[in-house]
Amino acid sequence: VPGSDDPRQLLGPMGTYTLLSDMQDYRYLRDPAPLGPFSQRTEPGTDVYIIGYSAAGDDPRLEQIRDAMIDNFMAAIMRGHLVVDGVTDKGRGWHLDSGSLKRVIDSIPDPERRTVMQAFHNALLQPPVVRNDSRLGEMKLYINIDDSLPRKLNTIVMRKPLMKVRAYTNTSITAKYAAVLECSSPQGNRILRGMEPVRHDDWQAARDKQNGKAVLRSIKKFILEELRKRVRRELGDEITIKGLNTLLPSELQIDGNPDRHGVRASNGPGSERESASLQGRETTPEPVANTGGKSVNITLTKPAVTDEDGSPASTGRQRGGQAKRGKHVAGIPATGRSDDGASAIDGSNLSMRYWYDAKSGDYILVLRSRSGDTEKGALRLTAALDGTFGNYTPPIETAVDISGATPRPLDVKEGSISTVKVTSKRPTKLRVHIKGGIRLQLGVK
Image (cartoon, rainbow, N blue to C red; front, top):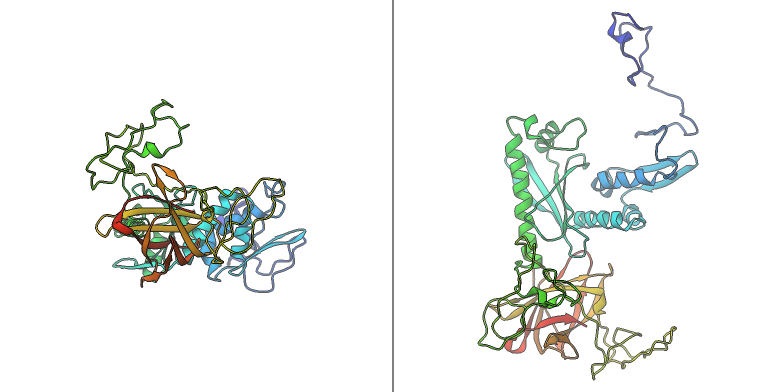
């Protein structure tokens, strides 16, 4: 009502509807009729109508909205606090609940988006690290360290509603990981809610003069400390490897010169320091441009050598057993031999990181499944001599699975470690001792 002195008549199109004939009270329609072709709600819940959806032409089944719900409310859906249905005028399109969430994530066609969601889903499946803070109460941190991720995915933070607020980045952590911080205690939820702007997309210290700065310090310190502990426990201490360029493919340029491939191994009394040279004391390493002083993690993966004379297997079975290789459909020749019947893990399905423990003379192996499936069976190791992987099998004396709280000794026979189990969710960590404590460049067959 233009010109009126009554503020209730000057509201305008603000999305608030009131009964203008009642000048003493504020009323709105509590029992609306059904909207369009959608049925009227008969049970407690929330309906969100998107009228004039700008992406409707490219997103007729509301899949972009589905992905946004997963991205922002994954924890709430996983725990059964939230169930979401995507409904269009054509009918129900999709359903999100704790039972269907993983299947829906695994079916997302965009590989990058799918990988990111799987990483945080796996993080929320891990046992959390719990810390009690004097201001925030109980905080939980879920961590997923995974070398197979395309990049570092940082730490998502949330409070009691289990809605993503924002992500924190730790530049000092070089490992690839996805982590989730949850603060659901009553006092923590109250403080953090007061630090959020109206968009609920940040925690701002200026909004709480009394607790803001101290709260953010506690949260960031907790995340950083626990990430460092987990990376050290699962991946070991990172070191900068001198002579790294000797392991790079020859077609890569070093300092712009494709003819320079680094240092050569040299004979000598040796050194206790880590070196990419396989024997002797290291020579002066070649400089590599723009390293920034960061550590480099190396994973070496080589094809299996299945025949006793070192002939590679170009096709056919890669697991042990009595079945022989058949003719390849494309006519590619196959070589190999029948094994003793013991199931062996296919080395191409694994990624391995390892380092040498100078104090004990043991190798620490960290294994992950590349395929996403659980791999079980015998682990067959090989080693490079003169920088070349061939048919050499390292003389393994003992092997222990140290992934859990209690070490589990493993049987060793002719260079194979039996009863090894590798999953995609958590790394499998082995302590392996090679006869004589010799230092080798290891690979998986």
